Length: 171
Ligand code: CA2
Image (cartoon, rainbow, N blue to C red):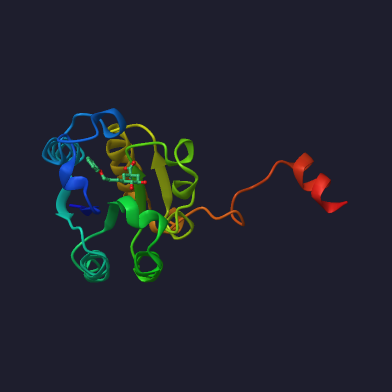
């Protein structure tokens, strides 16, 4: 049975109590409940961790190998600031999928950059609580793929470009 660690970053414990216009009315408990059900349907197990402290998140990521097959993370505000979480994600030998409730690219300029996405397997942003469900499905697909095709991420190097695009850049 595949095991996934879900990490929620700072202030996500406040979901459903404030700023419903931006983050919706769902609580963290209801998001976790939905993920538990989806994971069970897929024959997987999920554990949850929420912290407002950067170091605690770094430590949880580092301790995950051996106990988990992948990590689903909403780093919240640390998305845009934390070199420490980025380094932990880059170092951990597990696939990590980054999720956001809001579309961070449609918000203030300081939210447009994610320090995490370049070292994550992928990012899902802007679908409200559904971002978590999509992220879990993507992560379960990644961790269940046969070894040969389960690369941590598809980098720009491994994505095949159409022949026409290749010709253009050669000139
Ligand atoms: O859209 C997301 O999921 C974010 O990761 C949420 C973060 C924000 O800093 C990111 O730019 C995007 C904020 C999480 C705090 O959530 C609150 C919920 C209710 C009340 C106050 C904050």
